Length: 290
Length: 233
Ligand SMILES: Nc1ncnc2c1ncn2[C@@H]1O[C@H](COP(=O)(O)OP(=O)(O)OP(=O)(O)O)[C@@H](O)[C@H]1O
Ligand SMILES: [Mg+2]
Image (cartoon, rainbow over all chains, first blue to last red):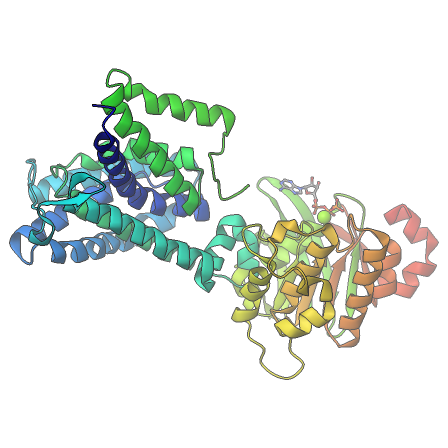
């Protein structure tokens, strides 16, 4: 089967689709870390929340598309609550305290979803518009998965434009480079952080919403995605958009092709790669700070 | 304009400033001199709010100065740090616009992008270069230009000549002289005695976190004993 061109196209598309999902999750987390050296392990739990909100909204009211819009907003609102209640107070505490508190937050959010939605998997349907397959490069590929790829690329393009070409993007890059000097130029780095944090949360919610029809929605999906997201960030390098997309692509390709070509090795492959990157480029491939 | 009264400050447990007092007067240039490790940079960081003022008081035009760096900046103090701190991810143009857009020129005589490029034409040729592709001298020019675009009432510079070739030191001297003639109030920390005393009106000498000598630039030039004792010149 590996001699068949269709096989490679199919797996490449699968890899790309996984990468885009991981990208949506990693980018917010990595820029938040780069900007404020703040570790938010609960990012994955916000993704799970997004999936639940999207699945419920889709089931109860407006269908998939309404869920796709409501989930990022709801998760961003949760981000505002977390920021005001917890994260703002923890800015001055060290990384260990941040890791512990946000790790605890994972379980608080996990139980919150259990209380609201129960401990069963929630199913969510692919929207009618994206049902079925599309013929592409000689293979039939699910339209919904292509949509996920397209959405990821669109988000990438928008973020690349905002970060690279606009004034607020320059402020964010300056803050990541050197937050003290950015503040000395009159930039309210804390408020910038808040905005970036909320956008990061919204993207986690969006990732949850697009993942809902692909996976079964369970309370611990946030915990399961956390390790892959952290691997993406470490491989890509902290704080940069380029790192997030590079790390996500590498993870997607290694994971997808590993699973079909060397199934017995697939679970260790990505860790071997992670170790290799850490040994040769300890700061990752494209860290924001050179 | 700026008064430090009995200021105490430092890093974590270590106290560096032990009751430091000095004053910068409007329209004048104050040079802050002192040996390595005397606490000069610490003084400027405390003014900017990068380090908390743990005792004493800092007043700007008679009122207590803001605590957070971005408020201090918005109140009209521009800072050129010892390490210049050009943003490596930003182009020269972006480094400049970052300051320019938030402190848009308010009237005639205020700084605009065109005017800083007239002051430092070299930067005009490097506008699309990355901030770190510049030479040390160019980085210093960029750091000063960026500070000017904030249209500050007070410009504070930490060792603007450190590590620069003599010809660039001369150029920076001339430009700062030009700013002085235009009436800009400045505080300049320096190791280069000749540079500092030919630019400044007033001099404060710092040793072990306190001001040990104050006077005019011409007085310290004439006071060989003070130079010897405090600066090892
Ligand atoms: N980040 C820091 N953490 C702890 N101590 C520091 C730090 N920076 C400086 N110090 C200490 O504070 C004291 C004063 O340092 P400061 O940088 O203010 O000196 P300076 O007068 O600017 O010297 P130089 O002429 O070498 O720049 C020194 O003893 C130095 O070791
Ligand atoms: Mg110094």
